[in-house]
Amino acid sequence: MPTSRQGDGHPPPTAVSAVGLRKSYGEKLVLDGIDLRIPAGSVFALLGPNGAGKTTVVKILSTLITADGGQAQVAGHDIAASPDGVRAAIGVTGQFSAVDGLITGEENMLLMADLHHLPKQQGRRAAAELLQRFDLVEAAKKPASTYSGGMKRRLDIAMTLVGNPRIIFLDEPTTGLDPRSRHNMWAIIRELVTDGVTVFLTTQYLEEADELADHIAVLNNGKIAAEGTAEELKRLIPGGHVRLRFDHPDTYQMAATALHDVTRDDEALALQIPSDGTQHALRSLLDRLDSEGIEADELTVHTPDLDDVFFALTGPATLPHQPKENVR
Image (tube, rainbow, N blue to C red; front, top):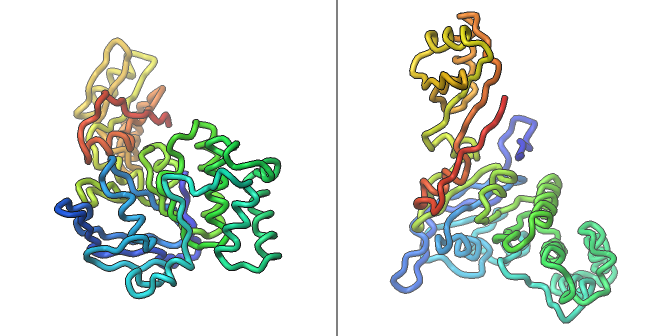
């Protein structure tokens, strides 16, 4: 799970900021005033359904297209006034691989080094180090067309890192990957952030955002529908509760009498108490039980997950989804 990376008490500098970004294609308004602030050395995840405008945000911030309105700074450079400064500081891995399948993995890396105007020896050294880091040494001399999907994605990101960017835009980097390759990609992203890189991630995998992101924004109909940490977003959705189970009927009855607003399950000797799952709410519940000399044999916190948040903010689920359970 994401962890705080600032231990000195000072807020980190801002890697990416945007105010009022707008973009239309003809009469279709894609972005309707987007505000963002992404601290350096963090993972930011932008969620949204297909067509919500996630890729458009990435393209604007990486200077691939221009906004119709608003302002943005990336790595301290204004995207309109200093696009070259932005490009020098960033790397972009799009939804579709930039890997050339007709040449080898090593040749793809060296081509990127040439595009960054690295001296020949420095380029070869950077390519060798990144191929090693991304576990591609054995395949380096093989045509990239022979690589698996996961290998191509690793090569794609390795190519992005040749210029040593401090901010990386990853636009749905794990789409189409099998679970093992997806988890390998997560490990790579965590390692990048440990090195101080800022990662701007778009994804449709809610679990991915939950695992990786320090801060999440949900984009819908051209606007930010909600933003915050994963836990903050989950608390926006009702339905959280605490379930207490008891082994002995007498203790169960005592708890049912002592607690208010409970739902009883007499057969299972279990009580359900509405709760937002916060530390304060749990402490209040436990203090009440302690004051009555009651000890539950099992306490389970049920909280909505990001799937619930996503569907609540962007539209109904096509299938019913069950909240996750965290046993404490």
